[in-house]
Image (tube, rainbow, N blue to C red):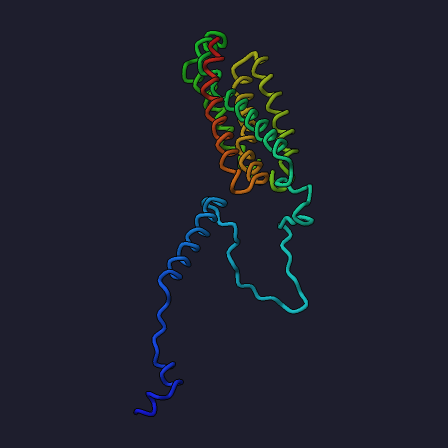
Length: 235
């Protein structure tokens, strides 16, 4: 026994390693700072894609046909590489379009009595002037959401807003109840395009840090339009 106690290797194996409390505290603080920087930069979003276990066949590389890739981090076609002023200009234009289409949804509500007197229909039919526009809101996103991913958002913005404007003009020129109600329904169908695609536009242009401010600006426009509609319609 005395021989083992005098053996340095034995004493080293039996020794208990005691870490410095100051080193432990500094390591914990460093980890906490990294977590805070991660939350401040990315918010609630996780910038890392979850790892997936896939079987790779030697000599074969499976490519996702729907995956969008860029020519390096500085690719000018990447919307997040556009200038900040240009990206915010697009946010303002998109929000203005949203105010326009939501404004049109509520504007006739203050004019229901005048419409009843002009077209000689009942109050129940008068409610359809607003209701059918909102039915178009329900139907439109089923087309504009998937369509924007297949054909791009810009062509759909231009096409839907042009047709929306034509059918708004048709409401102003309507000479009977059927024309008024049908044009309201079709107008709502095309008017839902900005509401459907604006979120994707903002997500494409901004990272997790700037997406919150741009999204808040757009969300405000969704509520400004319906509030202004009755005010302007009653003038």
